[in-house]
Length: 377
Image (tube, rainbow, N blue to C red):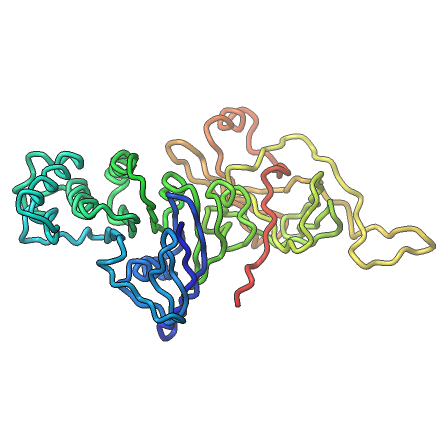
C-alpha cells in the first residue's frame, strides 16, 4: 500500500499531491512539468517535501509533523531514472554489484543471478557506452533489482526512444517485471504506456492530483475536463443541462437526450474522436425545449428557440489526413470556429467510400463523457 500526501513550494510552482493505492502497478500520468518526477523523487527520499506524509506498506517514510524522514538507502525503494544513470566507466557487472553488501563470493553470486535474469549474459564486461538502449535499460533494472526493493519507481523509462524500439522495450520490461511481487510506480506523459502497464492511475496537472482510481474506469469516465484531455479526448464542448435527461449543446448545434441521468454538476460534454457514428439519413428533431427557469404561459410550458437534431451533430469537412490505419477528419459544427475531430477506422472506411461523407455524426449515449472543472484548494 502506498499513501502520498505531500506539499512542496518550488517558488512559482507548488506541488500538492494526495493519493492512496493498494495496487501493485500504479501509473502517474500528466504533461511535462506537472510535478510527476518531483513526486517520485519525494517518494524515493531524493527530495524532501515541505510538509505531509509518505507511507509504504504501513511504514512511515516521511512525516513532517513527527519529524521523520527516512534516508533513501533505508527506504527499500529502487529508482530507475530516465537516462538509467549507469556509471559510464564501470562494466555491466560492476554497475550491478556497486554498493551490494556481503562477502566477495556472495556479491559475485548475486551479480551472476541478475546477469542471467535480465538477459545480460555475454555483456558482463561491456561498458554502458557499448550497449544498446534496451541493454542499458536491462542493466539499470538489474542493478536496482539486485537490492530486492519493495517498491520500484520508473521515471519516463521510454521517453527518449523511437516508436519501434519503445514498443519492443515496453514488452521486454513487462516480461522482466511479470514475477516481481513489489509495487511499481510508472511516471509517464504517454497514456498508452500507462494504460498498458498500470492497474491504477493518478492523473496530475499543475502540481495537483486531478483524480485517481482504476485505470480503465478513469479512461471510461474521467469526470473532469483536464483528465479527459490527458486521456486523449479531443472533442470537449460546453453544454447546458436542461433537466435530468436533456442538455443543450449550442456550439455543436444539437440536443442531447439520454436514458441515464445527466449529473447535475456537468458543464461540458466530451466524446472521443473514434466514437462518433456516421449518419447519412435525416436524424430525429426536437421542436425546442424550454430553458431552465422559464415560466409556463397560461399553464403551457414554453418551447425553446427552434428545432434541433437529437443526439446528432451537423458537420461540414474542413480538412482530412490519411494515415495507415485510419482517416482523420477535422470538421466544422454549428459554430464556424468549433472544430470537431472524427477519426475513422478501417471498419467504416468502405461505407464512407461508397456513400460519401455524412452530413451528420451521431453521438452514442454510452460514449458521452459528462465533465466539469476540477476544483483545486
